[in-house]
Image 1 (cartoon, helix red, strand yellow):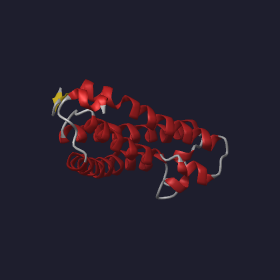
Image 2 (cartoon, one colour):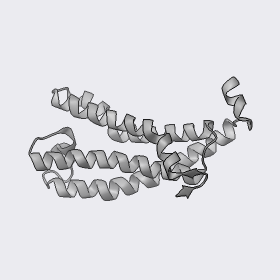
Image 3 (tube, helix red, strand yellow):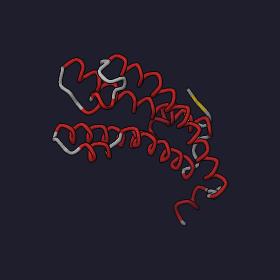
Length: 163
């Protein structure tokens, strides 16, 4: 399947380091919480922020490597937001199935308080995905548009490496 100028396989290959970044922040947050780190420190390792930063990094990569179009930016956003929400949902489901509490299933992060894991998971799979894709796509397209206007890339492939 080809979207814009990149195939899906090429798109995923470009995003693999960003998938790893999101997964590393997810694992760090779990480890910090399990180690008993203060909540202020655990909050700093936000998977949602890592996902948003990854979307911006994907746009920067696409721009400077002269890959893709706006449609590829939207596909990258969808893939990165889906990966982010999937990791969060897995952590919540793990806590619900095993009874081992973790930071993702904590009551202060799952409104309405005390309603259980299923509404929390449903919220991530509906509002988390929807809001993340819509806002992320808008942010990513605006960033690509700005980069194309303010930082034009030379038309010859060799000039990017030599300068």
